[in-house]
Amino acid sequence: MADATAAQAQDPASTRDAHFRDWPAGTDPATVGARVARAFAGEDPAGSRHYKLACAWYGSLVVGALLDDARLLDTLVANYAPYRGGYTELLAGEGHVDDNVFGIVPLQIALLTGDPAARAEGLALADHQRAHLDAQKRFAIDDMFMVSALQVQAYRASGDAGCLDAAAAAMVEYLDALQQDDGLFFHHQDFRHRWARGNGWFAAGMTELLGELPQDHPHRPAIARGYARMMDGLKAYQVRHGDGTGLWKQVLDSDDGRNWPETSGSAMFAYALATGVRNGWLDADAFGPVARAAWLALVGRLTPEGRLHDVSDWAYKPLSHPGEPDYAGDEENYYFQRPRLTGDYHGQAPLLWSAAALLR
Image 1 (cartoon, rainbow, N blue to C red):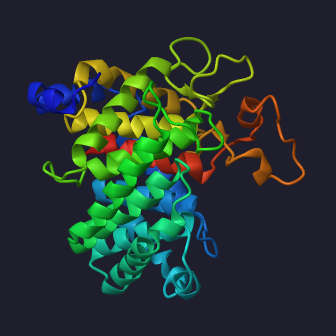
Image 2: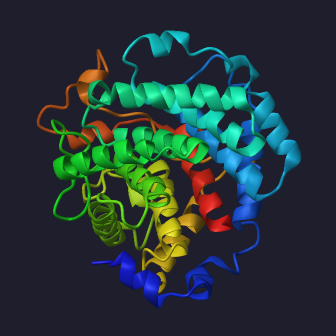
């Protein structure tokens, strides 16, 4: 199993970067990240507060800052204007993990610009989530990005360690409930399949949290172990040859011929792996090539306009789709039959996070 502490001690920064250099023409993270972020900035998201929009917006802001692209950042910040002051209804109830996570956008704007109103809005959403966290828990693996991302952003903006404490406690609870012997995760407690993007949300959530959680935090050892186990498990399931080489399939552990290479989960894994190598949590020679292969495979599925092919439509369980089959006796087929989308923010977002991880 990967040992994050040992890897950090053995791999100097130069070694950690070795697999993230000398990119083929047009595939470097600066070029790709700029193309994808500018495509997002040119769209009109007004009216939606969907979590996938928030995730792509956050990724675009981070990439814009890393590239020092003032024009891009100005556009991304200006596009937030229609959302200001629009959270009253959400804050009046218990909220939902998928709704509260929108706070990562105003918090990133505040971190980049010092905007006090954006900071207040984002912190209000994070405070509200902590106050109602038990009500928001579904024990679906998606939750662990929605909670961790918002609380980590709130910590970055406020310095309040209680944000990290809440996210870490929830993470350990979900690890105990959902992580399997191979390091991967069931989608949720009553639909027990290793869906790629669901696992990707968990991988990204652990990555965000480990990036800020103090070394002496009481929950860090359990989360670091869960992360290392997952990265080992993912390495074993990466497609090695044929269609989708470098990616992961829609159902990670299924050898069913109907299974297909899926890009949004793969992009989340690329982000988690690249960050782990960069930070010394993972052995660079063991995991650097895995992250590099994933990045190049993802870039190979981009349109010239910067939109990613083969993104799974949303999935929860068959009963979430009234009028569609119940897939009784063939539950994996629920995932195989999800539509394959191009340019959906579920895929655009983690591609941006991956670019950012490689740019840092």
